[in-house]
Image (tube, rainbow, N blue to C red; front, side):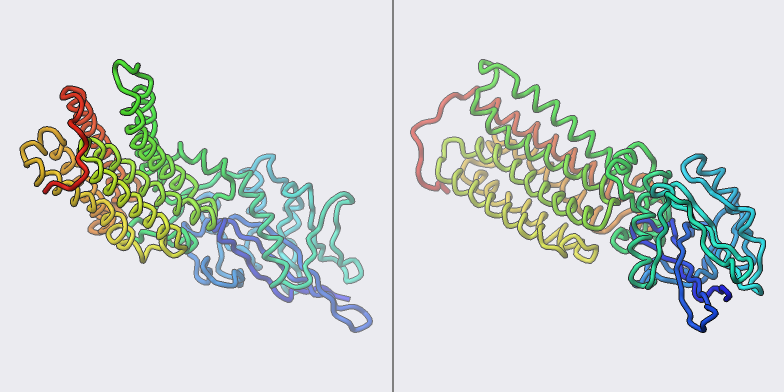
Length: 466
């Protein structure tokens, strides 16, 4: 009976593109002429963004590739893995030194003793990933060619590579990713569901299958750091301003004003908060990215709706029916935007202009109609002085300019790879959004103060006056 390596494949998971799991098929030729086979598992860390990979494509649909040409970065020098020439002993000791007590690398000195002529298998044995499993192929005489396993350990035995290797590799890699630190990677090292802006090259987070790891990444430097903090700080600021505003006594601010302003504060905090969550958990998994992407767009719609409520309330304070009609129209448009946002394909990169223009920009510009109505009815001077039309126009310009930066991906479009971490288009868009929200808050605050100074309205007017 002899043992030879029949097939060796490498399993790459979209959730962990820099960790590979190798499944080596051991063919066993029995004395009775029958041939049986087992598959043993091997974990390898391959930061292929820093290596010269010839045959490795992380986006291969089946996830299985020949391991030849794969490499691991050891002390700055690429070392091949999965071939007879690979110095697996050095690799074992480097991984052990790098991981410390997290992973116990065993039998490193035995992994490179045999050659391909004797039908050997270069095998890296790891212990401590899933309750202490130990896989240790031996390459002695044919009668002794067995796989030794600790009595209380767990061995992953796969009868079919295509069916079993991916499933068990995914579980092992996920657990491994929870115990090791991650490093930023290149755009082309990302799974397709994380690839959005090909003008930003470096500094991406790899998929992090732990929500806690995603939260901890807030304090790391990567492509989403600026996006997270710009809206997180904005959300905290509006929470503080809103709490202060609502805590004022009724002598200072009427309860009805608090209710109206609550719509704006709620929309702003929800929008900025959901945006922060989206950029934080975007790299968790494909389903999490899609979920928080939809919630992000829902937040944008709520911000626009919440911004319209106080402006329409104070602008048409003495015109009941125009106020009711416009508020209802904006609510319908907002709900329509939310419904479109929940469309599964809405978050794809190819619908960038649809998101930026056809839906949210159009929704925002719908406020032009009531603004023109008020200006024609009351006069442009009164609109500027009493309805804060100037602040409303400034808010709209900030939103439009920020949206154009986002949609056209400026400035990274003209300087690819130069704005990977800071001052990229999405960060600029976030800054404009926060600035526009504060401009609007200042404008509606002036409208509320003006309403307090002029007192109550004459009897309600129930028709449009143009």
